[in-house]
Amino acid sequence: MGCTSCSIGKEGKPGGCSGNCGGGCNRMNTFDWLSDLDIRDVVSNDFDLVEVSFKQGSRKDFYHNPSFNQVMTGDWVLLEVPGGGGFDVGRITLSGDLVRLQMRKKEIRDNQLFLNVIRRANERDLEKLEEMRAYERETMTKARAIARTLDLDMKIGDVEYQGDGRKATFYYTADGRVDFRELIRHYAKEFKVKIEMRQIGARQESARVGGIGSCGRELCCSTWLSDFKSVSTAAARYQQLAINQAKLSGACGRLKCCLNYELDGYMDALEDFPESAERLKTQTGNGFLIKTDVFRRRMTYVMDSGPEKGKFYTLRVDEVKIVLEANKKGEFPPDFKELQENVAHAQPVQEDDGEPEYEDVIGAVELRDDKKRRKKKKKRPLTPIFAPNTPPPAPTNRPPQQHTPPQGFVKKDRK
Image 1 (cartoon, rainbow, N blue to C red):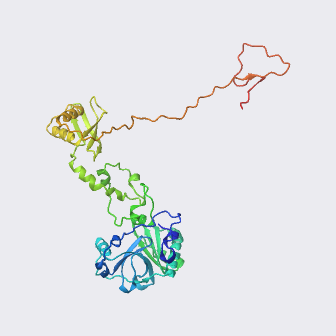
Image 2: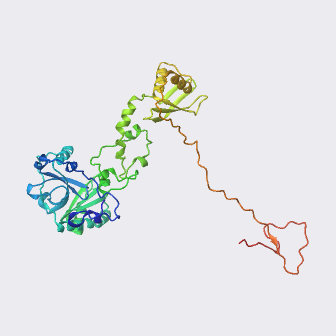
Image 3: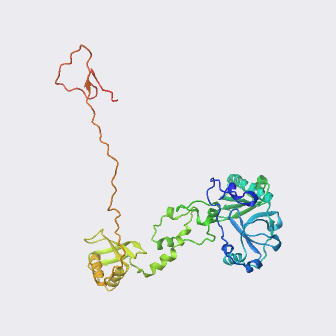
């Protein structure tokens, strides 16, 4: 996200964070690892394309850098814009042969036409850029209000001004096609700039806005993830996750991109697991699969019939394969417990490698509650207080009424 206090300082250097921003000031950073090597990169001097970042990495593009500019990685530069309407300001994030690798990754040819880098940005250019960045939030608030008054089914997610302030790009999300011709006329009348509307997806909107995920870290799409791959619920099923839409959805409302990170490891581990192992038959009843521990190679079954109904058994993958092969032949083991004992005796005894074995004590150890239980204090009986020179009343056999105390009796004050 980045705030204006930490984006630009004097002479184009970072001004330092004031602690009021929400994170994401260094999103989509590209590390120039060739600059740390004590070598002379001759090939990179011949490659005249540079990678330029806009608005703290929310948008990146490639530009042609003439040799007379004398700019390098980290410099703020003035750039040409399509159509020749003014100029834009950006920061060079990569130069040299690393740009060639980035273009190859994004499948961009180096023989196509690129816009040029005009010159190095001066203090006046950076002040103008900072002024436009400060005006973007107010513009987005007004733009959302205007779109709401026109009853358009769309959401303005972000606004980006050009470096000279002549053009504003409005990024919006919508479920379908939106006729915003009337909206553009209102925007041009209100903001007095050239208007460009650009539709983006929900994931691209989260990448531009930024935020904190359920893991406690900044969103991957706004820090380092540059390409979005499709995510399906099959990825959650392979990883034995509960299909809970609220927990599996990210800030964009779609399935989390991190579901694909460990998917290959789970699929490789599941190759050795038997297929159609949801139900196992024994002489004492049938067992249904309720849980699979992929990396520990364990499968948990619950008995649904017979004398052992409701009992849980955790079997290894090789034990499950033995039961499946027996069921295909029409044979049924006596029970899972006897099967585990037979497999344990059949396996050779392994030598102890000296590593300690740990036992799962979850639920077996309970912490003592150190809070002392408060004892209820017994109520003190009412004490009779008599007036001076007044004999006490004669005792009577009639019990006093419960709802009104007898006359002459008062309750002591507890101090």
